[in-house]
Length: 271
Ligand SMILES: Nc1ncnc2c1ncn2[C@@H]1O[C@H](COP(=O)(O)OP(=O)(O)OP(=O)(O)O)[C@@H](O)[C@H]1O
Image 1 (cartoon, rainbow, N blue to C red):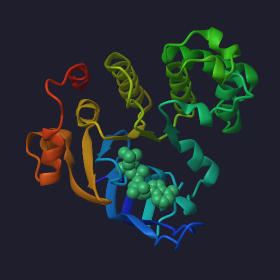
Image 2: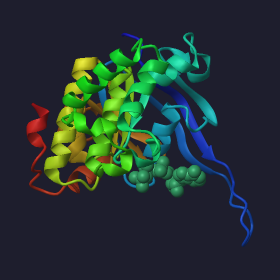
Image 3: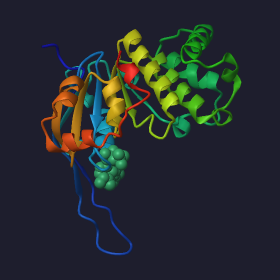
Image 4: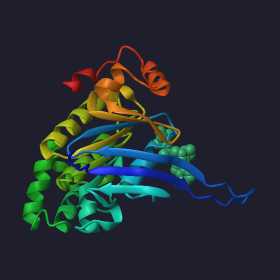
């Protein structure tokens, strides 16, 4: 079997105790317990579970944004902090996209700068002209007009900012992208457009995607495989086809039973 692109081995995460002005300090909280997952190159993997099950913590740990208490996160076979190509290359190859990336887009920069600066930094574009040409091409790809290049993030709608966030990530040609609840709360047609775009971009660039959602119908439409988290533990794992056809764990069955019927708007994505 080929080496996984992203892998956790026995990943356990505790959040440290917090001091309180009003009473005794809280004990530290164990949020993930011995999690083993693997995501292969080009694969779209869902991470599902109810609120508080540890999905976002797992996502942040995959990117090295929260430290492992025990166990390891590996990228291309090496621990995150021991990458042969260095930390900058890892930053390029592990990207995150947001529902509305307002807080991650520098409010003082135009969209042109926001899109061109990272590819210049990483040497993907060698000069301003090449970077501008790439920015124009990617804007077209995500369905935004070139006029947005001169605007600032606050001058765009939340949906347009989301597309800028996706554009900025894919311009780096990353090997892995994390999407955490990026379509929650969107109407069904906006959801479907974003999911189609992501699915196409994964195929075009060959990037792997970890897609965190509490919405099983979205996971089913988009993902090849799924991990089901409950109380910080992976209780089930498998191809979407097999998990949805024959869930093995009572928790997964309960999640599937809770999907509202009929499921509309995303089933055609599975094609
Ligand atoms: N920075 C933190 N410090 C302390 N506890 C935290 C922190 N972040 C999350 N938690 C706790 O860890 C548990 C898991 O949270 P996490 O956000 O990973 O779950 P989730 O499955 O993504 O939930 P949701 O779907 O509601 O976002 C929760 O009990 C949460 O309160």
